[in-house]
Image 1 (cartoon, helix red, strand yellow):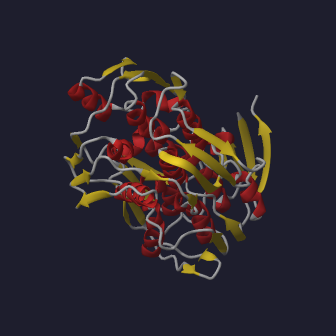
Image 2 (cartoon, rainbow, N blue to C red):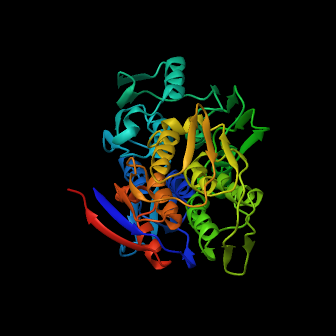
Image 3 (tube, rainbow, N blue to C red):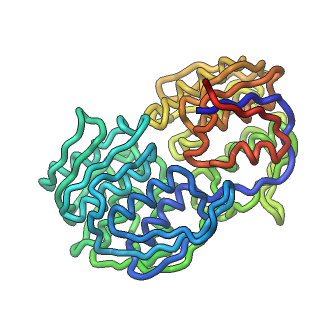
Length: 432
């Protein structure tokens, strides 16, 4: 593990936002289910995306990296799809990627063969109850370790009616959406509670449509899936990631002007909500010919409903901590079962830097301060906590040391390089 020591400074300039991790997972899987060759361009080989690439290869798909791999340089993947999946490797290691695990379980469950899913870190205990209910209803054999990974599955998912809660994780819904169109008969996914993270499901249906598969959305209460559909191979470019851009947008707001490049202003990403939240807090961002520009602003607290954009909470907590008045983040209970308990992690670490944050059962209550102090904080092995701490350092009076700083490799391997490129001052070294 590594640590970085950050000397507080103002960031300014232009930064190319890395491609969307959410879109990348979906495009890689969709291309993998299409007959023929697809080329997926503008892909960053983060640990999560490599987990999905390796997982699809374990299911009989060929994934080749066409470019020479350089840190921070996007690559193009050439994928030889195979809609008739087969188990090539009986163990699929999802590392720490919840998307990989939850998207691939139904795909592996279509083969009829036995496969075991493993993982590391908090992924081992991330809940999979929604799938266990499906397995029980359909008579599919599964075995886990007292509710934790490893998970062994054997059997075939059959078409039918699937009832899922909408307030647990949209990843279960997406996982079923990948496989149900390939089954011989029509299926339905019925949502039994209020739907959260709608943006992620919108994203799934949009990527599926790009690859020739359609799903009917009946007001997020029911999704109708025609059977006997076919994925079409195609070339596809991944758009920039709003959840990563959010860190630089807040950096511009508490520092100096930063322009985020490579974003789709018409994106369906749920984390595009960062723009309206920042506007409500007093940020006058604007879309230019190059990208989205944010500049220093005096921000004020507000109430933030995180139900549709949970990944934004760590960086919004930083913005709230440095805004006038009170910021309350609500409907964020699911963050307790992410890479870390993100509500506890972000409040604990920001409070070490002089923030005034109180944990709520489902969110955070933040009293704004003018500046933070500095100190030693930990990433909790969570990429979003590490990056949030880096941005918080911009308004600290003393240096900030982030232990476990290499957690950024999970989604944004060149984060620290971009941080330096915007004027950041860091000293990076190995721990111990």
